[in-house]
Length: 115
Image 1 (cartoon, rainbow, N blue to C red):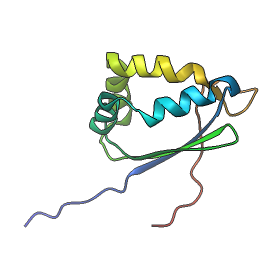
Image 2 (spheres, one colour; image 1 turned 90 degrees about the horizontal axis):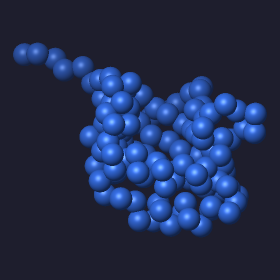
Image 3 (tube, one colour; image 1 turned 120 degrees about the vertical axis):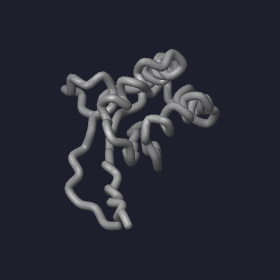
């Protein structure tokens, strides 16, 4: 009998800020997320994707369960509809830190986890 090893997911936490004049637009976009975008996210190995908002600060969490994160990210970035979604949501966001070189989302370092 062959034993299957189950790898734990790779966890991601990120932060960004909302442009104050784009907050309502961003929240509306996420109330009506395009189903194709959700399908692509799932097909690229992302699970448990959650975005939280408090006073214009966005916090995101997701788990990656695939085998090649960079390849899956390239697949997602190559999807035309996903790129259109990013073109809608991207202008609503700012990096979390004012001096950041990030376009929008900044990734946290994981320091602790409890299952």
